[in-house]
Length: 441
Image (tube, rainbow, N blue to C red; front, side):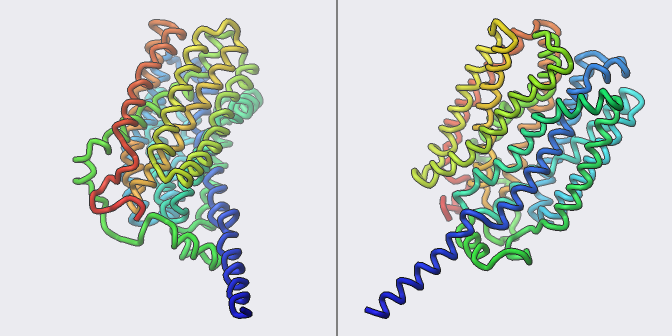
C-alpha cells in the first residue's frame, strides 16, 4: 500500500511538472516576440495609407496610381512566399526572419527617400519582397515549437500583432506626420524594425531542442505532441499540386487577404471622402476595426484550439469557424454600406473586419495542421494566393471607388466572400493532404 501511495505521489509530481509548460513556457515568450514583429510589419505596411493624401499631392499621383503602389508591394510579397517558406525549412526560421526584417526595414526608410513615383514603385516592390518570408517562416517555426492543439493560438500571435499595428499606426502616424512631415513616419518605423530584428536573432532558435533557455519539462512536452518531425526531406510539391484541396486552401485565402488589403489601403481615404472625417478624427475611427480584428484573432485562435481538443475535428474547429467569420463579415459590409451616420458606419466596419479574424487565424492554423514539417511550404503557397489578392485589391477597389463610388464598391466586395465559403467546403480539413501521412501522426 505504501508503494502504491509513493507511486501515486511520484506520478502526480511528474504530471505537475509536465503540465506546467502548457500554461507558461519559453514558446509563449517567443510568441510575444512574433506579436511585436507582426506589429511593426503591419505598421510599416499601413503607414502608406495614413500619409496617402500628402504623398499623393507631393508626388502628383491619383487613386489608381496610389493603389498600384500597394499592388507592387504585394507583387514582391507574393514572389517571396514560396522561396521564403522553403528557405525557412532548409536554413531555419531564425536566420531567414532576421534577414527579412532587416531587409524590409531598409526599404521602409527608402520609401521616405524616394524622389519620384517611379522610384517609389521600385521601393515598394522590394519592401514587399522583404516582408514575404515572415509568415511562412513563422509557420515553419510554429510547427516545431508548438503542440498540435496549440496551432491556432500560435498563429494568432503574429497575426494579432499584425492587426494591432493599424490600431495604433493611424494615431501615431498622424502625430509624427503633423510634427515632422510624412517622410519621418517611415524613418521612425524603419529604426524599430532593425531593433526587433536584432532582438529576434539573439533570442530566437529554430527548434526547442536547440535553445539553451528551455526547461527540460517544456522540451519533453513539445517533442511528444508536435506534428512536425526532424525530416530533411523536401516538400512533395507534385502531390500537393495534384490535390484540388491544396488549390482551394489558396483560393479562399486570396479572398481573405483581398478584403484585408482593401481595408488596409483605402479605409482612411474612405472615412475622409465618403464619411466626412477629418485627418485627426480619421486616425481614431480607423483604429476601431483593426482593434476588433486583433481581439477576434486572439480569441478565435484560442476558441478554434478549444474546439479541436473537444471535437478532434479540423472541419468543426477550423472550417466552420472560418465560414462563420465570413458570414458575419458579409453582414458587416452590407450594414456599413447603408449606415445612416458615420458612427454607425464605423461600428459595422468594426464588426465586419473583426469577423475576418476568424478565417485569418484558422487558415494559418490549418497550414500547420496539414503541412506539418512542410508548414513553411504549405503556408507559403497559401500566402502566394493571398498576396495575389493583395496585388489586385488596391487597383480594383481604387478603380471601383473612382468609377462607381464607395457604397457600391463595398457591396460588390461581398461577392468573392461567398465564393470563399464554398471553397472551405471543398477543403475538408479533416482529410490529410498527403496519403502517406495519416491525420494525427
